[in-house]
Image (cartoon, rainbow, N blue to C red; front, side):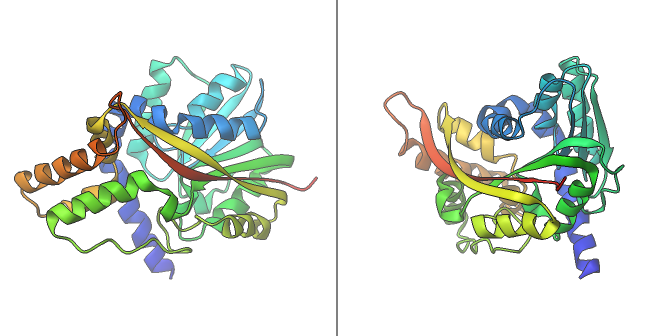
Length: 287
C-alpha cells in the first residue's frame, strides 16, 4: 500500500510538473472558471486582515494568492504542493501581483509536519481527492490550526453532475475509438474519490474536526466559445493521457469533435454554459 501510494504520488508530481508552464500561461482562464470556488472558500472561512492561512494543494497558487490579498501585509499565507514546478508558477504569479506575504513549501500533503497551532484557517481547492490518504492530510491540517480554526474544502461533486467533463471525454473517446472511460470510484485517488457529501463529512469527522458542515453549490462554466472549452481541457493530465501514442492528425480530429459537441450546446451568443456541482465542507479544530 505504501509503495503504491509513493508510486502514485511520483506519477502525480511528474504530471503536474510537466504541465506547470501551460497552467501558468492559462492561469487567467483557470481563475475565470475556478475563481468562484476560491472566493466561496475564503468567504466560508471568514478570512480577514492579519490572519495566517494554509493552502493545501495550492498548484499555481490558488486560493493562496486570492487569500493573500484579503489578509493584507500583516497576514501571511503558506501554500503547499507536491510539485516544485507548480510552486514556481505560483511564485511567478505572486511576483506579477507584487504579493510578498506568501511562502511556498514543496511537500507531500499527507506529511505536512507544520508547527502546531500556527494557522487561523486551512483551505483546499480541488486537491484532496487526488490523495491516497486524504484523512491523513486533514489530520495534519487540524494539528497546524489554532484552537477554533477552520478547514474549508472544495471538491468536485458526483460525476453525473460534471457535464462539461463527460461531454469532452465522450467526444474524444468516440473520435479515437476508445472504450468509454470507467466511472470514477469513491475512495480511489482521482477527481471523484470524495465526490459524495457523506464521504466528505466522514473524512473531516474522522480527522478530528467538529461542527462539520457540507453543502452542494452549483458552478456554471461560462465558456466564451467552443474553442475555450478545448483550451480549458487541454491542461488536464487525464485528457492528455488519452492522446498518448496518437498522431497530431488524430489529436486534432479529437479536439474538432469536442468543438462540434460544444457548439451544439452553445447559446445564441455563442457562449457554452454548463452547470456542475461543487461540494464544500467546513470543520473546526476543537477549542
